[in-house]
Length: 78
Image 1 (cartoon, rainbow, N blue to C red):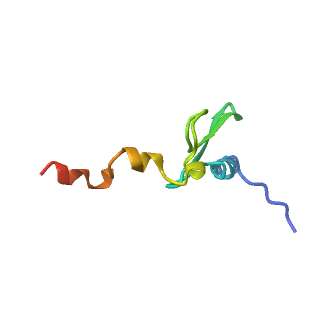
Image 2 (cartoon, rainbow, N blue to C red):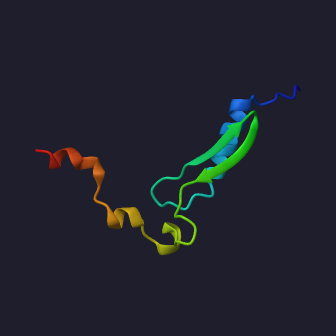
Image 3 (cartoon, rainbow, N blue to C red):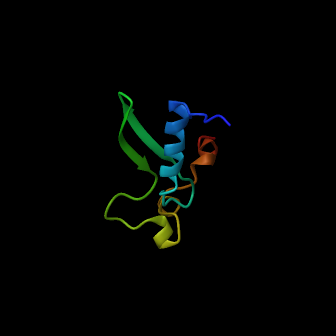
């Protein structure tokens, strides 16, 4: 049995996927990492800014409550 090593891009994508698991958005969760010279210097995920309540804690999506659904914005132009 050979020990296959994951290439760097796949490695970073797996880390970004794990970071996305920390997201607190009820709509969609994303994770990201910033890599410089093969060193991870930052990670991030979707959620409310520090000091604000998250959608998960509130039980509703604050963006949906404040902003209209933008998927149908072309209708407004008619």
